[in-house]
Image (cartoon, rainbow, N blue to C red; front, side, top):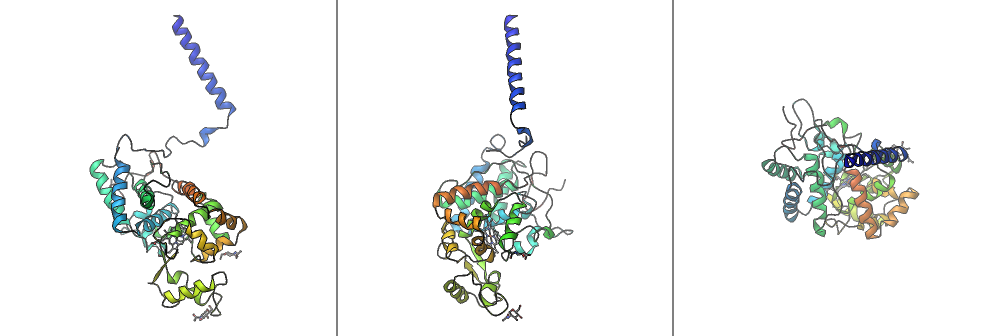
Length: 337
Ligand code: HEM
Ligand SMILES: *[C@@H]1O[C@H](CO)[C@@H](O)[C@H](O)[C@H]1NC(C)=O
Ligand SMILES: *[C@@H]1O[C@H](CO)[C@@H](O)[C@H](O)[C@H]1NC(C)=O
């Protein structure tokens, strides 16, 4: 009897404390979604999921050192169109051209690696692990491989979208010809700040760009056969020597010359020497706040911290969770239930 009473008092005490805490503090429920992504979402139903992603990804990076650049660009293009829902992975159907067909996405690759991981995981735990999570994890593991430790955290539990429209790409993927104001707005619409824009542009420390996307800066910037005054003149000469001419759509150059396979903060060093490849790179120096931040990111530790923070933000843009979307059986097709 007394024990029961004590229990009741205890419960009441705990409850009222909870209520008081809840009423007094900020309304946390508004920000906390029950089905939000979380660390190790697959621990129970597919405990080896993250291991499988990592081992297959690393196997491919060993034979293809440009894979990290390919994957991180695919992830960026996924997250900026309908959120990180794997929509960029879908193939076109007879009725719809998918995101892959849109001009900014035509050069994307690495899909075969995602599909191989998916096939392996479907064998091990069918219809559990989303393609959106596979892409997010594989990107992290590919970029991190050279360091032998994960460079940022990837909470999981994303679900796969069922819609992928080529027509939605141009309006959402930032253009290499854009000025700072436009880029800032592009990122703001995805919940990303100027700091995120600057830090994430640091991904251009790996990979390559096609001549036609920066040749105007070399040959005919304002229409008077001039070059972009914000481009380092010596570097412009070098770039001109690499490209066939103003309409060369096939030649690529390293975005971070000499170190385009190494993920590091060297991008910010060359950027500040006016050697950013695209107008969208150079323009980061035209805004006071952004320019100041590029200077901070010359410090490697600061760069890795900030890049990690911004990748974690980009990786959860408009994610589908809970019962939204589906878990695809194949990453390039929606399920046909
Ligand atoms: C700030 C806005 C951005 C613009 C305008 C932009 C634009 C571009 C363009 C035009 C290319 C070259 C494509 C080609 O010639 O094939 C490129 C490549 C690349 N971008 Fe961006 N990008 C931006 C932000 C990002 C972000 C946020 C990431 C990742 C976090 C990223 C990662 C990459 C990588 C790794 C490559 C090289 C891909 C390869 O080597 O295949 N970019 N970007
Ligand atoms: C940036 O580009 C947009 C779109 O082309 C243009 O309307 C705007 O005037 C430009 N802003 C600056 C500061 O050049
Ligand atoms: C340079 O641009 C101007 C104005 O857009 C154009 O009339 C001219 O034909 C271009 N020159 C070359 C060599 O492409």
